[in-house]
Length: 77
Image 1 (cartoon, one colour):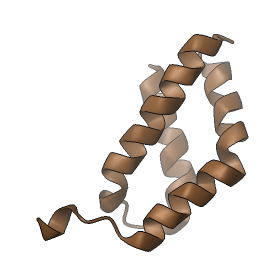
Image 2 (image 1 turned 120 degrees about the horizontal axis):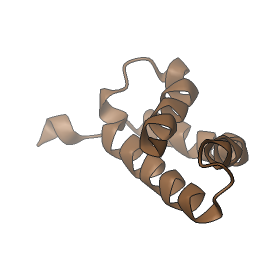
Image 3 (image 1 turned 90 degrees about the vertical axis):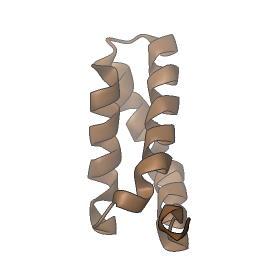
Image 4 (image 1 turned 90 degrees about the horizontal axis):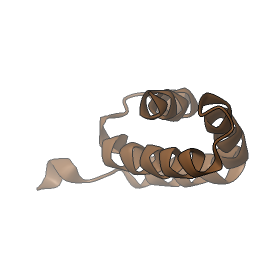
């Protein structure tokens, strides 16, 4: 199942994004959920899980932040 492998540099970039932009992402989701802390936590977790699952499909690593925020917006719907 070679195709299911995630490139290590992408995994590291996702981890860095969480460390650097995690609070910004939480605030973004918090605003989308109209200040619901429980929904924010659930959407944040679902966003990270979806990003991890779809990481191998990300073509341009430079767009990772935009991509993760797009996932969050879709999860909040």
